[in-house]
Image 1: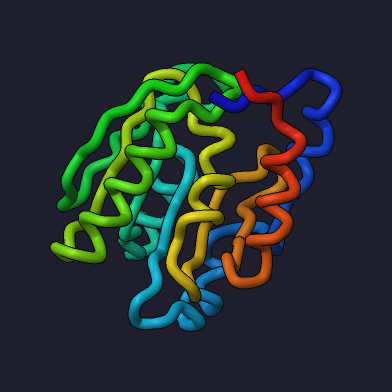
Image 2 (image 1 turned 120 degrees about the vertical axis):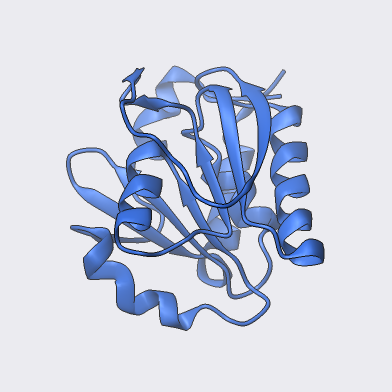
Length: 169
């Protein structure tokens, strides 16, 4: 398990991709996604907003919380649902395995996958960036500012640097 230390939180709050005010503003970027790449959404608001725009993520990761408060959003689309546990401020081995399983279900069987996290999904962008196929796009919310688009080919190295800043437990 990897743990985010309190003194590193401010660094992990910085966007690691391109910040857009809304999903609608980022829609054109989705055309950049390659044929064998994935479209990944992280967070209840981001996933709901994508669905509202008619964009169905290959993999969605939610925790039924918005800024640590229970979410009223019903995330519903044709998908296979996987469940995992991941305490706040961590990336558990189970989270890594579940994301890998989700990617595999999309790549091998063509399923859409929704990963429901008991705990918190906030740091899940990091394993997604590291494991996603080339050309994949990841969207996650930046509270109070908008949505961040991560083009994995451009930020894999940054994600690996961030992993080095997490504490192993």
